[in-house]
Image (cartoon, rainbow, N blue to C red; front, side, top):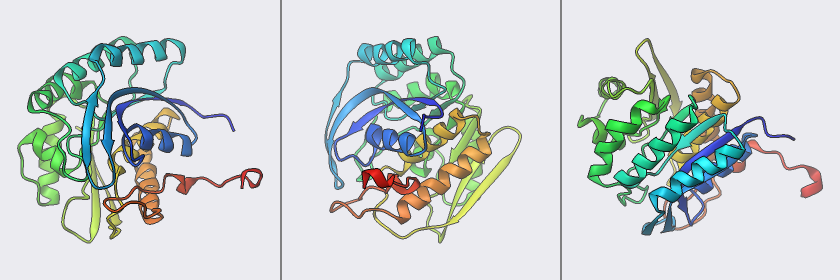
Length: 270
């Protein structure tokens, strides 16, 4: 099987394998894409907490992006953890040179265990410089609250906050509703023309580490193959829900999802 498309992932590494670059590569591969990477930071973490974040020099992040893409041009870009103002500026400079329109930005701010992964000045830079470069922004409710200073408790609040994010210059926003206290998941896709709500039954489990990374990478993969945005979001959400449902139940904290849920292993390799 030849990969259908090429995706560049700009994100941090997760030593436990459930989130970050590791989740991104697994997702892109499981959905039939070819994953390339630019690592922004190395983290020491497990399912319970993030112990250390070791940053990569901003210039080297930019070099990873440009040197890789000079040889293999991606069809889409997924951006995850960017922990400082300097890193955000280096990524913005690099993607400006690439001229790729299908950019999915997942504004990673807080790890599942509660550790903060970005500082306040970096959030300002993200809002000012990078959000407008994205085709799709995929915040969860706490991230949207940080970006908009709006408290989100209802679907009405989600719509209000998502419209404020559109005002920052991004073309589309998928505001994920997983943190809302309800029996159903309501994920909201919005742009200047329309609103689409994806409603699914919430799966009760603690094994949701890396769901945001996984979803944004899945959507980027579908977009890279030429699928329209609404379909890409629908398929990405389905993939993540199935991955949560079939989780391997690893670790003592927030365990990973099952990225292999879309794959049938060839008999030769069993």
